[in-house]
Length: 66
Image (cartoon, rainbow, N blue to C red; front, top):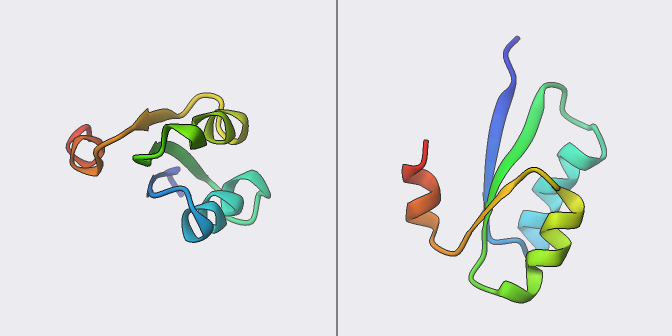
């Protein structure tokens, strides 16, 4: 099975849950590769949880990135 790359739109309660599936190893071969959130205050939390993840402000830009 190939790795599934996940992009999260909004890093609130629901987005945090989806992120935890990766950080807690609950889904094999899944990696959070991008997160979009309009709140810059969440950047530090996102960077701490996913150090190699690209952060976007606009979800359309994230989706169009590939």
